Length: 392
Image 1 (cartoon, one colour):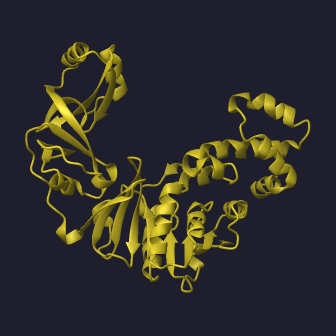
Image 2 (cartoon, one colour):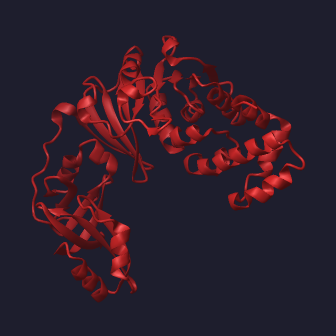
Image 3 (cartoon, one colour):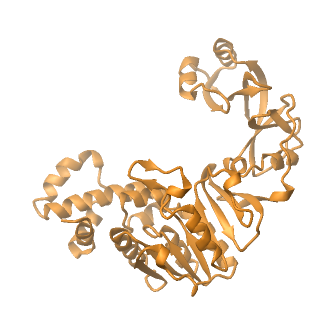
C-alpha cells in the first residue's frame, strides 16, 4: 500500500472510528494494542492509524488538544507546521491590512491556511506533494473550513498569484538529512520566494530566525516572532513598512520596532548594577537590544553579551528583570559555598557566553534548602563571571 492509499484509508468510516478509539492510547502499550486491533481490522489500517495517533499526540503542543484530535498529520508536517498562536497572529495581521484572499504557497498540512480561513480569508493552499495536499484537504474538511480553503497539488513556481490580495510563502527548510541552513537550498530557493513576494501587492515570507541581517533585503519589514520566550520564526513583509526591523512577543503581542536607518548603536558596556535584564530572544535576533537598554537606562555587561544591566528597575515586556545579589569570578567551589549558606534548594541556571552546561553545574552544587536562586554563567568585561540573583 502506497503512502496516499495508507492515508486515504484513515478517512473511511472504519479509519475514523479506529482513530477515535486510539485518541488516548499509551504508546508504551502499543505492541499489545496493535495485536488486539489486527484481529478486527486490516493490518495496514492498524499501522496507519497507530502512526497517525502518535502524530496527533505530538501535534498537541502546536495545535492544542481539541484541534490535534481532529486533524491529520505527516511526520514532516508536525515538524514544519506553524504553531497555532503564531499562525493566528499572522492571519490577524493580514486581515488588519484588508486582505480577503491569499495564495498560501508551500502550505504543508495547512496550519497557516486554517488560521487564515478562521480569520475570514479565502485561501488557495498549494503544495507539490500529493500526500501533503490530501492531508491539508482533510484538515480543512475536519475543521469545517472547506468553503474557504482550496487545496491545489502543484509546483508553486507555476501558480498565478495575481488574482489574490496577498501571498504567503513558507519554503521547506528541512530535507532528508534534517534542517537546511543555506537559503538557496530551500524548496523553493529563497531568491525565488523573494521575487514571488515582490510581485504581489502584499506578501509575507517565512524564513529561519537565524537569517543574518545582511541577507535581509532593504525593501522589506523583517519581523522576529517569539512565543512564550521561544523564538519561532522570522518573517519578511513586503508592501508594509520597508526598511524596518521588529520583534513581536506572543502571547501578549508586544512589538518593538525601529527603522533600519534609525537603529541605535550597541550600548556601552558598564559595571554590573543592581538589576540584570535578559532580553527576549526575538529582541536579540532583531538586533534591538539597544532599544531595551534605552528603555531601562542601562548598558551591556560585556560588548559581546546580550545582557543589559541597570541600577534602576523598569517594567518592559521585552526583557525579564533580575535583582543581582552577588557577582563572583567563575569558581564552582565558591558558588557551592554561597548557595549552601543561602539554603538554596532550587537553582535556575542560565548561560550566555559560557561553555559550562547548566545541568552539569546543578549536579555539582548538591543543593538542599528551602530557598531558590538564579545564577547566570556569563562574561563581564571578557572575564568568566557568575551573577547570582532572583527575578525582580
